[in-house]
Structures are given as structure tokens and as C-alpha cells.
Image 1 (cartoon, rainbow, N blue to C red):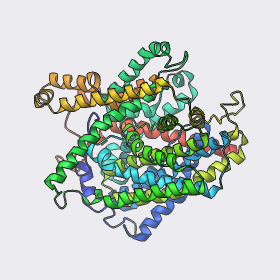
Image 2: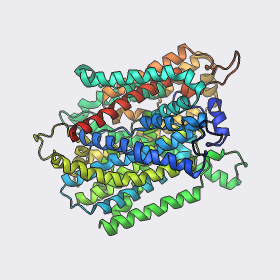
Image 3: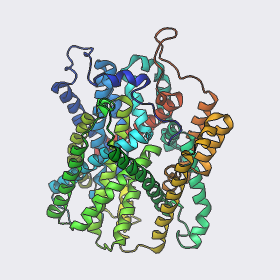
Image 4: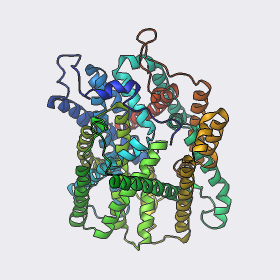
Length: 620
């Protein structure tokens, strides 16, 4: 799906790590706990749960209350985690990955503190804090289970890029392996510095901010390449071209951008394409059952193995727990709670695909879609709508975050079961901090309780709360599902399904495949078909999620990366040991991937520290 598939952990530089135990080898320093021991995991958990997690969680909560966007802090957690595990040598990257997984879970849950603010804006009665903590925690446990269920499809089979997963994996490898550090630090560090500089410039130079310039957007484009970014640009341009017509027929208001209706079409396109992919997987599964196909022992690496029956039982258990808590403690109707759980199963997959391609997780779009569907089913009560849609919002947030963490582990060869356990602990802490931080912020700053939809001229300072504004605006639209909304969803579903079927048929044509692989002319034709004429609905749909300037910068990064790699195509660089020796660096540590990952890291760190600095200044 991307320009080039991520390198497998069983190949190149990752091979030596994946083939050994993730905690194998003696530590460099005698005082460090034995790898794999309970003291080892206690050390990692303590640092992640009490330092890295709250650090990212506070920043994420503050940023959502102020800017309406947040960064999960995986990059910072990865860097600081690598400092803790450096004494374990190259295998220390697994321990650092465990820590960033736990810390990212805490941050992702804390970002959901805006749900409490949305409840206040809607005038909902506030249940006891522990009721909300239990509810959020149960939903989080359900979400991580669903996210793990889709790991074999999104990470192993489709091999989606997850650009921030690239960045974190490269950072963890570079900071714990002297050879990789020597080969990559200049590019990665240079990209990080440039990313922070660009972030600062966009904050202080009005023209750059107005142009939608973003270092992480360009960096994500450099990671995934032009076969993903060009379709996104084409989708955005097509949408812009149709804006006058859409306004004429009443689908858009006089001043509305394409995005207001485009995200509905885009989400439906992803659904249509996913129906094709999931149907093919189902057919393959049936064939395997009929033929009684069995994987040979040892074919699946130990670090990849997950007990699927137990995982399904996990999802079922926490799904039942969500129903019990929502209906008994929060007194919500069973039907719409179950509907929220069912939608979560779908949107963790859809948002995981979008996240894997673009580094953008459209959780607010998924929230709006859920509200529209509940409205179609006749729901009119905003309190019920908020609670049911919250299940979807939390599940897609932590489930997609789970996929990104698994993509990092996929590149490093990190044990999935252990990584899952770390994420579960992070969910527990995150559920407590989510509600706790919401109460602290809203007690300290009463302005956060002002419903900005009802009081558009209120002086709120830096507390823009854009995320809450979107959530409450969607909930207040219950009962007003328009005819054109249904038509937009059906249109996107048909487009996505049709294009994906055509792509699958073309890829199965042996003559066409020989042609595109046999010459430069064939390569050009293949690129044109993939990127322009018959581009992936998953990639094209991105033009409906975000504003056109953002898509332009995303495309710029992809085009730069593809041009650079095409013009400088040569054997992959090797890690120097002696002349003619050394390991070939994995594809996801190419120059463009390292620089692109550095851009993502630089901007993430800049805004993370900016959020913490703003919070400290307010408290001071």
C-alpha cells in the first residue's frame, strides 16, 4: 500500500535482534536488573507509569483543552526510555519500546479528558468520579483488545507504514546500537532539529501558519512516498473542484469547505474498500479450513505469536464489562451502548488504516459518523448519544495507538504479548488520570466550563477547546440527519468498493504485472495507475479528512522522497565494520525515512514541551 513495504524484522539489521530473545544478553552495567526478570520489568514499569506516562498525559490533556489537538508523546518516551535501557545494549530497544508503549497508552487516555468537558457543556449530570474512571478504563481495555485483533491484518499482512512508528523504531534502534547510531544519527538528528525549527517558524511566522505548513506532515509524506500522497492530493483537488456544485445542491453552505461533507464520503470509501479486503481474507480463511491447512511449527516467530482464543475472550469480557458499567452505574440504555461497541469493531479497523497510511487518526470524524448513524436510528437524547459515542472515541484512540505501537514492535521484533501487558497497565493509569486531570483543569480554570457554541463571544483566552467544540456540535445535531448525508455515505461506499475491486483484478493480471516490473516504461505506467488513475481508496480518502493545504504539504513530502530514492537508486548502505563487511540497513532507515521521521519527532517534541511550558506558566 505504500511506496515501499517496511522491512521485516526478520531481515537486515533487525534480524539479529529478532532472532534472539528480546531480553537476551547480560547488561553492560552490573547494577542493572537481569533482563527478563521481575526486577527488570518493575524498573521499566515504574519509569513509564510514574514519569513518562504522566508527563505525556498532562501535555496531551492540556493541549486538547487549549488547541484541540494533542501528541501522544511516543517520541519523547522512546528517547527517555532508551536512556534507561542503554545499559542493555542493542536489545535495550525492546525495553524502551515497552516503556513508550505504556507511556503512550497513558497519554492517549488522558487526551480523552475532553469528554468530561463535553458533558459539562451539554449540561449532563456529573456521575461520581470513580464511575467515570471505571467506564473509561473498561472501554480502554476493550479498545486495546480490538486493536490487537487487527494486528495480523494491518501490521503483518497489509504492512502499513505508521509513519510515527517508523520514527520511534528508528530512534530506539539508533540510540541503543552503536553501529546504527553511527550510520543514522546525523540524518535523524538533522531532521529532528529541522522539525523543531519549522514548528517554531509556523508558530511565529503568520504566512507559514496560514499556508498549513507542518514539519510532521511533510515528514509523514517522506515516509510513505508518492503512491500514497499523490492520491490524497488528487482527492483533495477533486473535492475543491466540486465545492461550487456541492454548494449549489445544498450539500455545503456558502462558506463551508469541502471537508465538511468530504469526511463522510472519505470514511465511506474506506468502508467500501475494507469490505473487499475483508471478504477476500474471509474466502482465504474458508479455503484454509477446507484444506485443513496448518502453519508449520516455527513458521510464525515466537515474538509474533498471540493466543487468539484468549484475545477474543478478552474482547468479549471487556465488552460485557462496558455494557454492565454503562447500564448499571451510568444508567444508559443497552441498545445504544451495544451499538457503540459494534461501531468500535469497525472504526478501529478503518481508523487504523488511515493512521497507518497518513499518521492521522480521524477520531473526531469517527465520532461524528457514529452520531449520524445513531440519529438515523432515531436517537434524540444527547446524553445517551455522548456516552455511546464516547465508547467509539476511546476505542478508536487506544486501538489505533495499539496498532502504531505494534508497528514499532514489528520492526524491532519485540514480543507482542509482553508489549500488550505494558499497554494494559498504561490503560489503568490513564483511566484514573483522564478523569482526575479533567476535574483538576476545570476546577482551576472555570472558563473551560463555558459552552462556546452558546457563547461564541466569550473571552476564553488560550482555551479554544476545538476538540470539545466538534464533539458537542455533533451531539447537538442529533435528530437532524439530512437526506444528503445518507447520499454522501452511499456515494463513498460505492466508489471505494468499485475502485478496490478494480485494483484487485488488475493486480492479479499476470501480463500487467510482468509489464510494470519489466522496464522503466512499465514502472511509469504502474506508478500512474497506482497514484493517479486507479489509486487506493484508502489513500485518496485522505483528501476528504483534512484541509487542502495540509494535503499539499503531505504530498510535497512524498514527492520529494520518491524523487530522491528514484534518482539515487543504488544498493542499500551498510553498517561499517570492515571493508566489504557489515549489515544492510533496513529500508525504513533509508535517508528519506530517517529525515522524515526526524521531522515528525522534532515537531512532536516542540509542541509537547510547548504544552508543558504553557501549563507550568499557568500554574505558576
